Figure (tube, rainbow, N blue to C red):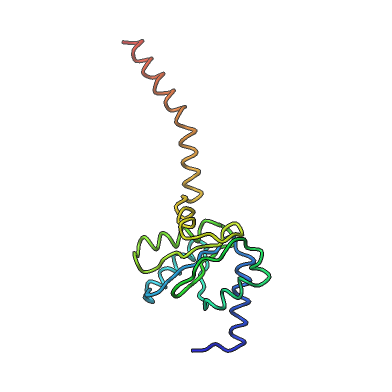
Amino acid sequence: MALSKSKKKEVLDKVSQIAAKSASMVFVNFHGLPVAETTELRRDLRAQGVSYTVAKKTLMRRALASDIGKTIAGEMPELGGEVAIAYSTDDALAPAREVYAFEKKHEGKISILGAVFDNAYIDRDATMAIASIPPRQTLLGMLVNVINSPIQRTAIALSEIAKTKTA
């Protein structure tokens, strides 16, 4: 069904605002994703502070080629199939990470096509590398473990020395 000019303008404005305000955007091919799983995807994304919107590819390209889109470096990845945008204004890693997690859970139903990260277009492989970065809390836990490890080893060594001295 064709969109009216006013509806097209609304979509163009919405995608332009997303490009201007978001920390990162991930382009997602959702061809063949049933309604129930789409609802699950939206719920999972919303829980992590990620928004999800669907737009026609031609309108998406036009919005990203406008003045706002001209500040994005590189070349836009090939957008095949039915395309949606997952984006976040707070956490730049969250959209890629959450879509990738859903993609692993529901193999073959959705796929990442590329992204806009740090004001540059990146391809699928680079987006997958970004998606594999653990969340901030996990990274902080890993840092604490690295800092604690030498202290723990010293305590164990001193304990063993104390056992040999008393024996």
